[in-house]
Image 1 (spheres, rainbow over the protein chains, first blue to last red):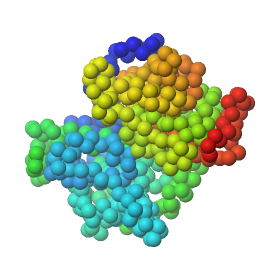
Image 2: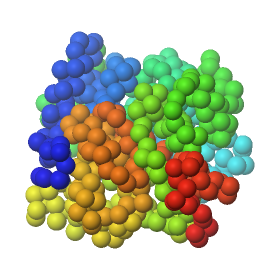
Image 3: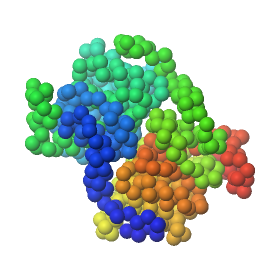
Image 4: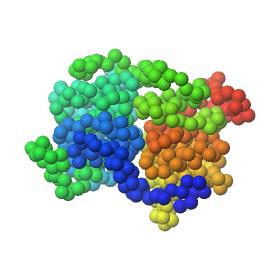
Length: 235
Length: 235
């Protein structure tokens, strides 16, 4: 391709760009303590952000990858906190297992309920989601209050998520909400600090969806996950 | 709000969280050479990423802010490279001036054309957009080939964008494509290096849309923009 620019791109095919990017990331990241399956998530988060610090800040519950893969294979609903997260998730990869990707924050009843109770729309959306999809994958890229509400509902026994991906970005309550998520003994992927955001959340989901397609990957995180088989259920 | 967590958030209202975040950003960023109006864009990009390095890497053509505000006030079409960018842009702020936010990358004819010509969908999408909205605001958060195609069409005289926001993220061609954008003497907002992404692109558009609402802001960038009035046209 000649774009009439001094710079002549050598690679323009998206798949080849991604392959080359993943090589660069593996080279530049160097040593780390992630399992091979966790690394697939880390790599895709760095790919989406070009931010090694963000990638290194990721923290995984030991069952997170296995439970996420099993949930995708079982067609569990994915609940996104905001439209940007929903927009980025690869729908065909989720739908082929019978799953779907939902976002409630702009629903009329959610907006009314938030106003009536004086809570954020993000909180009201999680309450609605918890009724619709109590065993879903909860993905929070933006709203710390959404993540705090997920934590509250888990503690109250009203939500048993297959996985919580909690990577809200920001200067007020984001880091603190993620620190609270880390205290729970449920499958979670979080990160430490202020960074995070929709692309990190999307990258984590898409990485798990790609792992879900690997037929031989039944126990990707090693012995710790042996009691938690990730065998395909409706694949 | 009590989420049953050890951490008790003091602020949960989105507007107050944003106000407090903007204070923190202004404090921590310290000295910079951005104009006050450019700083509004920088601040929102940092807010969306918690990444000061990304904020500091932004580069503005001297007419970028004025031309962007004028284009929004005139109801010019905003062309997004991917759905995530479209999803994040505040539609009511754009639509009230008669504008819209379009994304072409998943159109059936774009996919066919890309296949037929052996080009990326991102390139085919920009070609279609250039026919639909030759004077629009072009927003690239993801695909370097989309930005390179915008540059090619500008050089060929087939595209006269009101503004190009070019902040693709990535390891292959992203930095180079933005360096090429910087060489053009057209209104652009770019950033240097690998970082960028949909939230940065969205933040820039939303910052400009908020500036467009300020009735007294007719010449936000100072004397350099005097020949390029940003008076509301159909506000």
